[in-house]
Amino acid sequence: MTSEYKSTIEKIQPVVLVGGQSSRFGRDKLIESVHGDLLVSRPIHALRAVFGNRVAIVGECAQQVVAAADFAIDDPYPGLGPVGGLCAALKSTELDIFVCAGDLIAIDSQTVQAIIEASIQCPGKLAYIAHDGRRHPTVGLYRNACVSFFERAVANKKLKLGMVLDQESVELVQVDSNALRNINRPEELTD
Image (cartoon, rainbow, N blue to C red):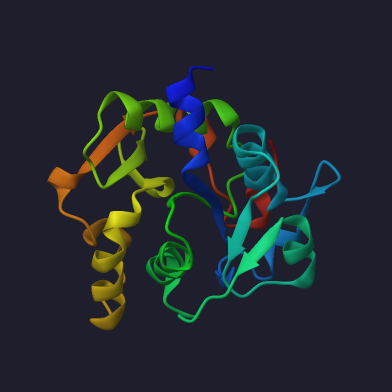
């Protein structure tokens, strides 16, 4: 691990988005057991492997989810989806944030590290987003400098995450599509 990589890690707050309604799942999917652990523990563990025990959650959630994380960020934008969660996380810290959706069943530390490495290799972007042929804006690094874009999106109720930032300000990072697999229905819980 290079000193530049270590320095970069220290300037990032890892965050898991947990405020979804699990409507297609039919019940709270984040507390579903996957090999004896909560589904939400998957992204928490992947982020801890890179950042240590300082993973935050943001969004309304069950107490088991709160207990699985290291701390919770208050979400003044309930019901506004990932845009609201990202805005809350960015406003809560002066750091950049690395975000993962709470329902990522196969996210791993290598994927997180690849995105961080891309931010070092290609500085100057506002966000570094996972890509596997399509964009996955709930897996990526967002610079704190983009907080005003998220505040404006929340104020204007423009809640499509992929539309908050100009395409020129986003670096797409090619990663393994399996790591980006999220769970929407009970039958998808098999690994």
